[in-house]
Image (tube, rainbow, N blue to C red; front, side, top):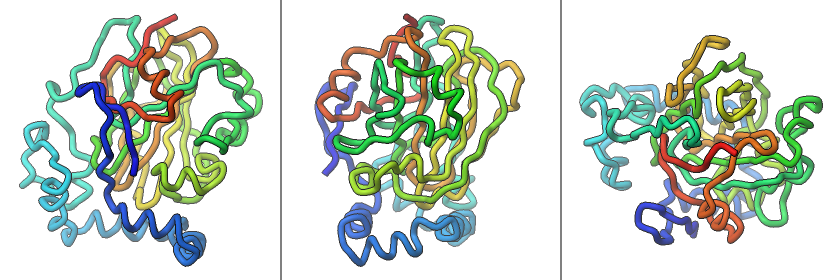
Amino acid sequence: MIKYFNRQTNSYEIEQVAGDKYLQWTYSSPIGMKILELIIKKKIFSSMYGWFCESKLSRSKIQKFIDEFNISEDEFSNPKSDFKNFNNFFTRKLVQEARPINYNKDILISPGDGRLLAYENIDINKLIQVKGLTYNLIDLIQNKKLAKHYSNGTCIILRLCPTDYHRFHFIDDGVCDEIHSIEGSYYSVNPIALEKIPKLFCENKREYTILYSKNFGDIIYIDVGATCVGSIIQTYTPFNPIKKGEEKGYFKFGGSTIILFFEKNKIKIDSDIIEHTKKGFETKVHMGEKIGLKS
């Protein structure tokens, strides 16, 4: 059972997990863990499932998914009849009104939909995965010189569930450099898996870039893949000027994670998000929503 805080309802809610029984069995049983290590965490498994989600055969999943998880079709920028396969639906664009963006230059927005954790004054050698499990920034980005710049800074972790909007966006005006890709495994990023796999984010396939932002300093922007994520697709052009709210890319099918690192004294995260993080709960947010301020 995964409990999170919903800002819109001002209450704690229980997450409806896609594939809950499968996740519980895989990450909690001896046989499941063996199959995980032998097959499920491998790239070929996620690639094969990605192939299925690109095929016409997967169209039959669309309506079932919409009904089961109560997804609003009013937000779709295109009618569902336009979707040729499940990934077309999964990576759907939304109408602009569905995700209004706060363009105030002093306001920090969420880069996507998901459940958010935030940590201030971080120790880059002991970043929190879950209570009792930590990892370090040097292993995550494999760049010791760069990692040192973020000591005592701020880290936010946005977990995207399969039911979420899966395009991610820029949080400020600026320039973004090229992608640095790090190969890895394809573990789930669900809290069920985070409690079982040490240094999971450092194990998974990931891509990072530096966003040289106009108002919030130089930000490490990390996109983490997961089980059944066919691909991480980047849609921006490196070194071209970008605007707050513009699309950076999207994940094909699967739950995924975005991790942002900010330098010391650049931002101040909203107190409710910090408070719930300290209590061990994620906060549900939407792309474009205010999550903090410029320091």
